[in-house]
Amino acid sequence: MQTVISKDGTQIAYEKLGKGPAVVLIVGALASRSDHAKLVQLLSPDFTVYNYDRRGRGDSGDNRPYSVEREVEDIEALIDEAGGSANVYGISSGACLALEATAALGDKVKNLAVYEPPYDEAEGEAEKWKEYSLKLDQLLAADRRSDAVEFHMKFVGASGIAILAMKVLPGWQGMKALAPTIAYDVKVVGENRSVPVERVARIKANTLVMDGGASIESMPFMRATADKLAKTIPNAQRRTIEGEGHNVGEKVLAPVIREFFHEENQPASYTGSILPQ
Image 1 (spheres, one colour):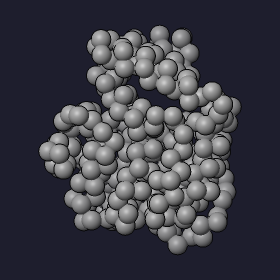
Image 2 (cartoon, one colour; image 1 turned 30 degrees about the horizontal axis):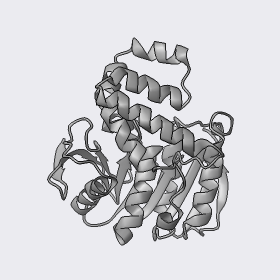
Image 3 (cartoon, helix red, strand yellow; image 1 turned 120 degrees about the vertical axis):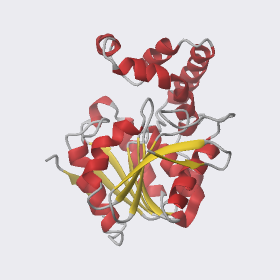
Image 4 (cartoon, one colour; image 1 turned 30 degrees about the vertical axis):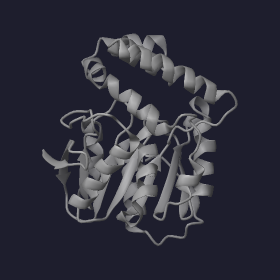
């Protein structure tokens, strides 16, 4: 493990593996760098992979107050450590953070790949998001971490049976430890959960926007969100990974990321589907 100090003095922990162009990996909610361990192994033969704990997670610090801008500064510190420019990949709310960072950091992000950023502009969803955010804040303020994790899991579609099963597994304690950072992900996704059109339109990097073919059944808004992002970001490509849901398989995802980061001059108008292997 190595560390870098962010602009506000927060220590950010990361692991570096591989040789080649730099790639920074960004996890989503209730995840730490260990959740990208398999992806690191798959990408490291071609890239120098920077796999880090977002602030408040794992071995990283958590200076307050929190803001999305501070998380962008964390990514900037990692990119500077990598030599001043890097490719960036983010999944779920980590994809939203990757979009924010790329819009803010300009040429420091060479290429960007995002998988299913969970913006949702369907009718009535903004109000549901505000109610969810308020209830989550109340649970966290009362330090009811287990209840906060359960509430979040239900909101994103986990069944009661699935949650009961998760509670008896060792991973539940890890999620409880990460519970306060769910509020950070809420801020990253945004107050209304809408696509931040003005900001992403400023993105200069070649961008790959992905969704999973199986998500159309469980999370249909992911398709509309990915389509809107690809139309808004100037140099964007759009791909669907067939057969995959929100928890995309690393063995299917890694070749897509590898191809995109290697072939940065591919025409931005390309769209297509990636079949599962």
